[in-house]
Length: 358
Image 1 (cartoon, rainbow, N blue to C red):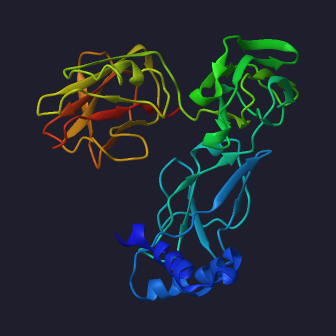
Image 2 (cartoon, helix red, strand yellow):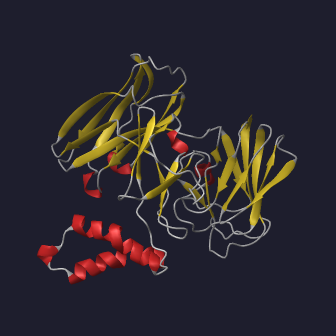
Image 3 (tube, one colour):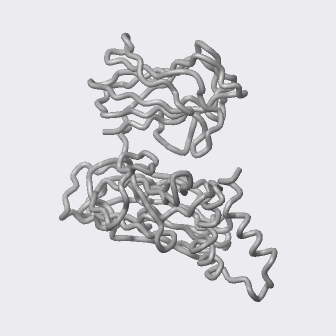
């Protein structure tokens, strides 16, 4: 309750007690971060601190503190930072920004949400006119390694989703890597998958696509191109539980971290979900997540994961802790199984794509 309520109550008080002509965000934020947060801390209130901003560019992560003197810590393995995590002091040189997480800490009991590193958009547009825009961008600085890359088109606001995108092409040294010709609506918030296998720092990359605004309503978006930190091997998912047709088991096979499975029934003791890889997968760590992404509803409370090197004999891994579990295989894995040992006391269960680390 305190985390959800503070420092929002401070802002509500500012609005209620200040004359209209006296309201000034910069002045209020300065007073809030220079004195009010310390006052809340002295009162023992576990408030929600302000998160930092972390930007990746040209092989370096640079963090902007949310206010002067803020303490920011980071984790380089994709976990939420703790009070024992390294302190951010200077830009971090790395090409593997995807796993870094940053978090502001005010004291032992008070912290901000953990945030991922952002990359600057590779392209953008804004228009309210009916017509076609052809966009071509040099994105050589954006691509810095081999891997699976995702291109996402992100409307700036709910009111700027007009338009369609088509003929999306990625070129390496003027040679076409892949093209998506199908026209897709901006409001569908789609993403496109590309694979780079011949990267070197001398390569030249450019991105071409077409935006068509048919209605004359506002169309404005940022285009991001990010490398996945995970492997995406072909996998087949089966289960003892009935799926919700709108959230089928195939959603656990697409490696879209925003999509998820919903069963059509509660989970009970003896239920299971089985992931079977077409070819065995070598990995240092595989995370098994349940519940809705970014919102821990419909998680597994009682159960564990097990894994098999041959698809027949299974080894017990972690028990679920707040809906999540991990395995640390020593050989290539053929199958992973979620074993449920009790109900989650909710009408359904949800599960997410595996996070398969290199």
